[in-house]
Length: 168
Image (cartoon, rainbow, N blue to C red):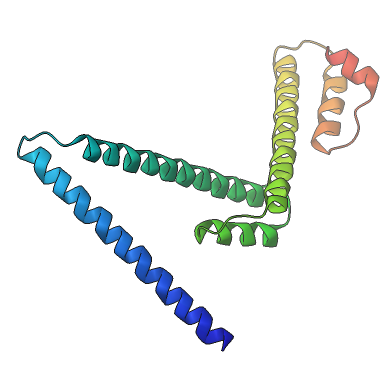
């Protein structure tokens, strides 16, 4: 019984959505033909167009938000941040245009924040290593000390405070 109810409900919803889409399509085509003939459209038709355009803008904004979120999920997966299975679940909801639960949105935001911090940290390390390379090329500073600092950074070992001060 429950299965048949769900099937009938689904079929009913699909039919209503299709009829609504046809109605809008026919009305828009009528307005388009009026304008193409060089005639003015009524105030009601103009209001209708404005309302449909605003709805289109909301849909486009939502699609852009979804596309950005999917790209973010791809970045998180690429850098190994977060739970990829959870991201796949969120992606599926987005692709199916199903609202994502608030707790999942919050999780995604937290993981994105962590990724930003990770990328910022990586960029700082790259800049420091570049600085050390520049100092070595221009023969400024103690080459052995610079090499030791660089090795520590590359091997992800802690750098002594005195070495950080030396680089400043």
